[in-house]
Length: 293
Image 1 (cartoon, rainbow, N blue to C red):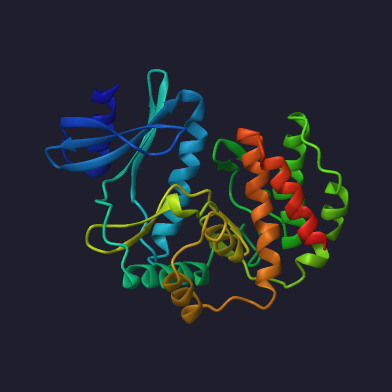
Image 2: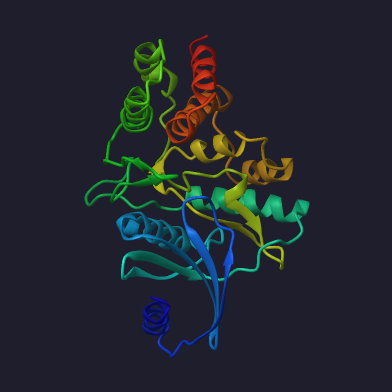
């Protein structure tokens, strides 16, 4: 397997790559992750069962699209493929663990805002659709990205509606589900522009390199309302205040964001229920009560 991966890297970079050392590194709970040290550079490799190949292909596409905006730093994808009974994705190696300085976090906010302002991918002949070229995953849950012209419709059907559907299979009980879905058009009537979003921007997917450059990782990319990214940064404790200051200096949030962020974060809490069960159902119901007032 490793010989095949080294050969694929060689093809991708246009010169011979030989593995000199490899070591297991942390990288989430879904994949096995490794640092590859070689004669022509170092790489970060994720490995999973071959059935996850589409998930990796979607991650490569998302990283490529974010990279192409030339705004915020993401790990540059090198290659992906299958070997034997596993699939893999190879990314550039970034030395993370830099100082979480005010300057770095302010720059992260500024550069994320610039990415949100960049022209997003769109289906041919359109300029303001929401969705993506293909479905991907949020964690290990399928994320449906059918192109839709109306943001509220997209979020109601392909974000909340799909998560509720999965939750029912886990015996989740959400008494106000129908009332909430019916209220989404009114709750999301602010007509957001289409933006390329990270899609899973919690603290574990944002980092700083040893040189102080902000980086975002492990995306669940699609084209949506930029506020979904900002809302998720607030879900598990929030980013430093410098991040929000930097973001708003470049692309200030629309009026009503504070009311919408709970709705946007409900998507992730429902997904946590579908992935992990436990108390996330109760948290989701409390959020629904809050949203409906």
